[in-house]
Length: 408
Image (cartoon, rainbow, N blue to C red; front, side):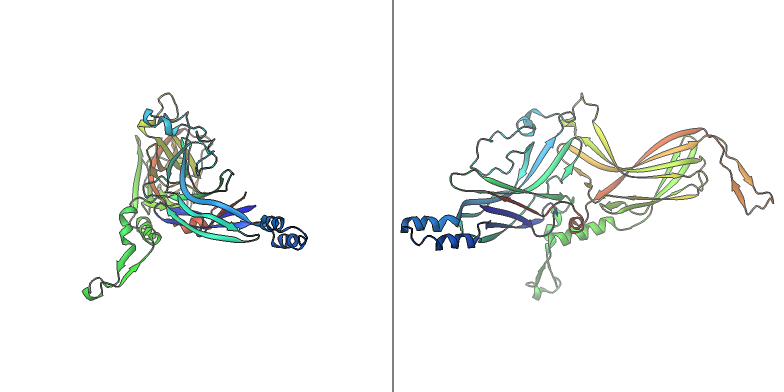
């Protein structure tokens, strides 16, 4: 028996365009001691029989290949399949199920293989003695314009590294290891910054070139996008006047960060008794794939919520965490995923009473809430920009496994 083990060398989360390195190990699980014991007990056997006994612990693998592919699964109740994509996007079992000796990474999986890298041959005709193992290094990159890993209500994108191996007169063995892909918009245009001249102003030192990884360039871009630049003030009004002012300190946030804001009610003309803020992602099906008979053209998923009673409050701090497992905003051929802050205001239409203390001290004022209030609800949506985080940080707390193995 041969064990195939696939191990990611830097965690399970990567950016699109970044090289994904992994180590693939093939091990003969037969024990050496058992084979040598058989040899010692076969001294009285004929030479032809002894040679057959001697090779019993040896395993031979004809070939092995590796490939990265993305599997796309759609919800038929929400998405309409265009005629030109009818063959590729429908959910069905692979038509080539009967072909058991060729390398098909998406064999047996639901949906369509949206994209796949070129398969790389690891070896041909590998012979392993009992207890022997050999390791091979494999690396490849997902294209920059690929969709990210996403699990929505209308569509799902799942990336996997698949290693296939075959022996003579035997079916192909597949080992799959899932990876998470994040997409940073505009990273493709910055890839030429991976090499730079240390002293570009000196014409005599043109040969002193330094290189840095694509991850370093991406982290620098993310830091620039999400740094604090200035305050963003939004006035919330209705037909009766100002409800409050909402203040944000950044225009973009990374997954894993917290959205910090302040709601100022000091100059409001309409009293707000209760405030609910929810961080939501919006999934919009593109026009070409919209199903007119479906009632779910747009869907929303809530991640974190904060509820405050603010009848006599002057300021309220809003603090909403962004899960690091969430998918940043992106747009593919099928869906457009955006983020927003959904506000629910419960406004009072009754006059408020303010009672002072018995000593009539103007420095001390006692606010007394009435037993009942006339309430008018109001909602407001504020779009926010959510971008990826450092994939190394996401890998540190990811629940995705970094190894996968199989025995055949």
